[in-house]
Each structure stands twice: as structure tokens, then as C-alpha cells.
Length: 323
Image (cartoon, rainbow, N blue to C red; front, side):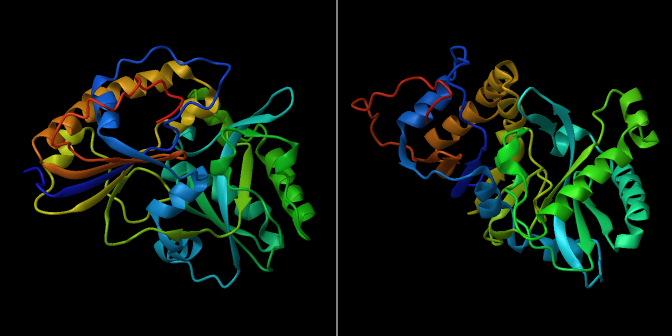
């Protein structure tokens, strides 16, 4: 039964198209346009990584990761993202996360290779999630790197590590890239048509501010206590009862936005019109939903059903460029 006092927040990083030179084809999203007409917009500019921190976990990410894998190591820990990178003219393009198609078994095998290679250095890799790992080192490492989440699919010369241990981080990145070049694990991936793993992004710990009392739906590897994403609103509504506060975090738009793939970007939005925007509009009209928010890096749409049609508010059709 749908929740009659449901407070639902949709967090959609990558919702807005960031490239002015590549125009978005005209979109037909009538339900989303009505939801926008019923909304009050507030600009709340945030980095992509901040959205993840705000909604996906609470406290130290590394501490929760260590608990998840039952790690009792006393070493200094870092977050590690395996990536598949290709050289461009002025920068490296990379794939990360779900786009890698890494299985748990493959992640474990890669970590075993890295652990053998770096055994003398005392580094130890642990596959917390298939596409998001933890590494421990015997000493504190002083360096700064931006979150991979904020690099939008490309790495250039401005994103090199800084700090007293920056040289060591660069050295390890280079050595591990050479180690995996033509490695049997990557040869097997190439034979299966999967991107090879040829790079690693090291980050310091990240502190999340999510409310653990809120029910979270997400398929992101950064989340620890999330339910799987429902395929559509009907599937979500049928699993709920009573008054509940829900966050649904869907980052499927990040990959096409990072790659400048406007076709896939528009296809996902059209699917959302059918699976989410129209059913959500109907639920608001029937007052099955009390309150709906849509959040992305640019800001927040606060949506409530109007008692009267807001005919005085002229809302242009969604064009992917602004809420």
C-alpha cells in the first residue's frame, strides 16, 4: 500500500547537462514539467561528492568499511577506487564504479595481486565493494587529492597529489599501472569485452552526514545501509506503509554526463518520465505523497500539491540545463 504521508527525496547527481557546446535534444517530460510548476526552487550548489556524503553514510567511511570487512589492521587507511583510464590529447579519461563491471571475485583477485607486489612496503588492499576498496599502510600518509566523484570522468595536470607524501602516492600509482599492464586478469577482461583495470585513485577518509533514521534506497557502493533501488515508483510504493521519510539516491545519470553521451542521458530521462515522474505526479494529485523533493548538484526542488493550479507561474519545459 502506498504511504499516505510519504516524504520522498530523490537525489539525482548528474541531473543537469553541464556542456553548453553540446545541446540537449528537445525533451518531452510533461509530468516533470508539472512537478516543476508545483515546486519552489532553492539554489544549493554542492559538489557531487558532497551529495554522496550528505545522503549515503554517516561518520567515517573508512571506519564503517573496516567494520564491514572485519579488518583488525592498525595501519593507516585510505580509500581506493580502481579505474580504467585512457589517454586523451590533454587529459586522461576514466571509468569507475559500476561502469567497470567488476565482480567480487575479480576484485579479490586484483587485491591479491597488489598485496603480493606491495608486501615489502606493508600495504594491504581489501575489496570493501567490487568497485571501491580500502588500503592500509604502515605509516600516516600526508597528501591531498580531490574526490574522484568530482572529476567528472577526466583527470588532468591540475589533479596531481600535493603534500609531503605526494611523490610516494604518484610512485605507487605508476608502479601499479605498470604491474597491471598486460596482466592475465586484464587480458581475461579484454577477452570478455570489459574495460581493463589500469589505475587507482587514492583518497583520504570522508565523513558523511546522512541521517541513519531515514530509509535509504541506493545501488551506490558508497552506501552501507541501503536497500536496492526499486525499478519504478509502483515497486517502491507497494513496499511501504504508514508515514515514512525516504531518500532515493540514483546516480545512473553520472556516467553519460561524464562521457558527454547526450543520447543515453536523454534516454534515461525519458524512462524516468514513465517510471517515476508520471506516477509521482499522480501520487501527489491523490495525496498519497505528502512531500516530494528533487535534489541535484545545483539545488533543490521542494514540491507540494497545489490546492489551486498555479496558472500565474510560467514554467518552461525542462531542457537539462536548469531546474
